[in-house]
Amino acid sequence: MTNLNLISPALAYIDGQWVGHPEGKTFGVNNPANGKSLAQVPDMGTIEAQEAIEAAAQAFELWRKQTAIVRADLLWRWYELIRAHAEVLAELITAEQGKPLAEARGEVAYGNSFVRWFAEEARRSYGTLIPTESPDRRLMVIKQPVGVVAAITPWNFPLAMITRKLAPALAAGCTVVLKPSEETPLTALALAKLAEMAGIPPGVLNVVTGLDAPMLGLLFCTHPTVRKLSFTGSTAVGKRLMQQSADGLKRLSLELGGNAPFIVFDDADLNAAVEGAIVAKYRNGGQTCVCANRILVQDAVYESFVEKFSQAVSFLQVGQGDEPQVDIGPLINPRALEKVKGLLADAQAKGAHIVLGGKPHALGGTFFEPTVLTEAKPAMLLSQEEIFGPVAPIYRFRTEEEAISLANSTPYGLAAYFYGRDIGRVWRVAEALEYGMVGVNTGLVSTAVAPFGGIKHSGLGREGAREGLEEYLQIKYMALGGL
Ligand code: NAP
Image 1 (spheres, helix red, strand yellow):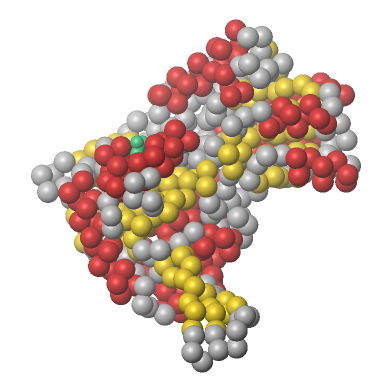
Image 2 (cartoon, protein in one colour):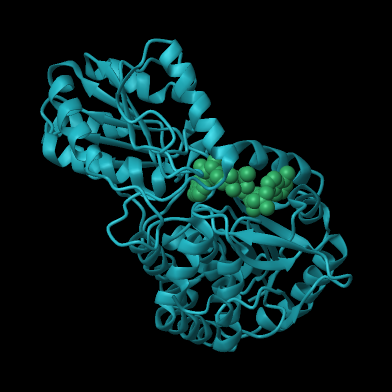
């Protein structure tokens, strides 16, 4: 394995300087697969975060005035450098997050596709000229960068959740202070290192690592210089940040939790549905916001789906992400393991039947067996919460109406999936699902070119696509009179 310190300096990055905590306070980053220490990074507090906000404010004055093509070229250079360092970045992701190396490589390519996309979109923040209602007036709309952005990101995609925010923010002309998850700060710092190498000016991108997320979050929400907060993480924390931001009326993007239904209708291609369900459920060991949380299968195909699906799951290999052939790595930490165990115990007590797995893996640590359970019911806790582990509960339904009602019976509304061939039903169901994203005959919806995001308790705003740039732009209308 490459020397990971070469790429990730393990220091915070403020105003173009790599800095430690003034009194040397640090916290440890460990490999979740074996508990080994990877690095110590600075445990920054509010004073250092304020310095970062001030640096971002100063840099904004120059960055906002750069032409779109200058910003685009710098993003392109960043994209090229990420691509050139893809392998070491993937190793870093696997080391600090635990996902299999093949998935980590996929994350680098996926995450970097946002940098490329927004390098292209940087030049397209067009305004409009509005046909006027009086001959001596001209009406126009221009788009301008929002200002200093604070970004808070989770551990489950240590690279992609960052580029989805930073690339559009920088493309729009905003400057950023990023606080990555304490579990996975090294990838964030590596990205900053590559941004520095790309020539992105000091202060445009700042990374503040720290253990006290609530304190840093409160500062971001209340600091008058921060004009926008972009957060990806749990719904509970997202709501808290929204409340804290109310006084300052900050622009908000909130990419929050999900509870994705995966519906299999009786006319589905079952083999394709199994393949899609494996991807939608077990990617990152079940630790994604768009993971299939509830698999709903129509009565007539229930038994055959369970059989085929369980067989496919039984082939999944559990192990350390840097070992070949591994499909599922460890859960992120012991708390996650306890949560999965608790949800399973509750489901069993309420009548679920375990077909496969069901307990911590023999490897120990936070490894968990890929698990399939049948006769899942809405009253079980795992129907109501994100499982965030390799556990697939399967529900039985009879009619289309019942499937839609079950699928929508959650406060969340991020991603939903269904398999079926009847064209009328495809339209009806896709329109009836109360979700921001719907995968029809596919278990994978994420791409930089489409708007990613949720409704209801899954958040506000979109990342990626044309819409992703709008999140960092504000509208100015200008009326020119006296022509
Ligand atoms: P989390 O506990 O909400 O943490 C997310 C980020 O917020 C981390 O950087 C965390 O810092 C920080 N944080 C925690 N408490 C905070 C507070 N009071 N104020 C400010 N920041 C705070 O979520 P997670 O466990 O890392 O990530 C999993 C969640 O993210 C799941 O719910 C998942 O569905 C969601 N997610 C959503 C999307 C999407 O696009 N919709 C994508 C990925 C993940 P520390 O880690 O340092 O504590």
